[in-house]
Amino acid sequence: MRAIVTRPGAGRAWLTEVAEPVLANADDVLVEMLHVGVCGTDRHVMSFPMRSGRSLPVGDDFLVIGHEAVGRILKAGDGVHSLRVGDVVVPTVRRGCGACPACNVGQADLCFTGNARERGIVGLHGFLSERIVEREEHLLRVPDELVPVAPLVESLCTPEKALRRIANARAHLPVGGTLSGVERALVTGSGPIALLAVLALRLRGIETCAVARQSAGGQAAGLVERCGATYISLQEVDLEQPRERLGAFDAIIEATGAVELSVAMLAALAPNGVLDLVGGPPERKAVPIHASVLGAMVGRNLTLLGSVNANADDWLAGVRDLQQMRVAYPGVVEELITHRYGMGDAEVAFERLPGQIKAVISIT
Ligand code: BGC
Image 1 (cartoon, helix red, strand yellow):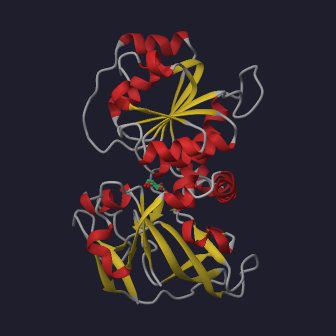
Image 2 (tube, protein in one colour):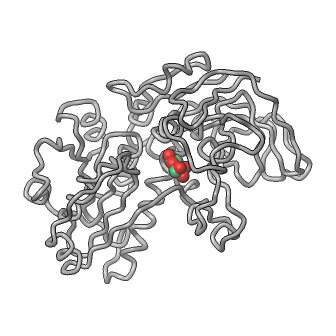
Image 3 (cartoon, protein in one colour):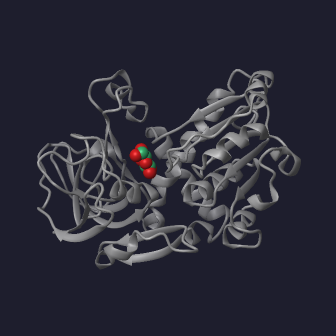
């Protein structure tokens, strides 16, 4: 069957023939892949060699790329009870290390050893192939009408986890309401994770502001404003004093991975505020932190978090919220997918193009 594969460090992905996957366990499910999203992590996997011994699936010298997927069940093993042939499913990404307390209870997003594997990213083949086999427990059923946009469920489970962690970090506060009393929130960035974070916050009725490099009046600003949030171009913000233009926020989701911005945004937190970093910094460099920023962390009881991957509840929240977003903000979710490709477009589909939010490769 056809698959798009790469080698960490190869700098590109290409279409090739790989062996058909086979059902090996009673709870295995054969899935025909429909659409797979492209993400920055794919480009990272292709561009950089990974740690030795962990990068490629055992026995193979290539990696089937792709981890944001939707497919339809073709066949299910005798031990599969919750899914049926014909169901539309989204596969989750991370598989536990088998050796730590978090992975042992199905919370591989919190892996203690760092040895969890991820389909299409590290140690396990991904989803950009005509068919995959996956265990029942790693497949989420989604409604048929979500098929065209369902690769976004994977992107959305990152902000869902961020919202859960922000609420947890504020759970001790003597305030009630949504996300433990978050009234004003900020999202930095204009990629799919940032925009889905804005949508998820607006769905919860929270006053939300988005800050990104693009100028006001552009594509990101338009999408943000259509869901009732405010867009402010980064050009208008003094990173030394972000509160002057933006005001203060109870919660901030930093989705650019730009380290200067991550540090600067600490100064935009209100008392008891929480900043969650969800964008991995692409560069290896040091940034200075002014002592007053750390002083404010103490003086205002601030929390700095980092979040990766997602647990089962976050995935379910992603499926539920994606459906609600389509109703609440008509067309916005669909417009996040700006580029669509076929399997033959492997050489171009991973390029980062101007005006691109999410690119999706269709398999069939
Ligand atoms: C994926 C996550 C993954 C993370 C780290 C992200 O792009 O969405 O599922 O855990 O990369 O590899």
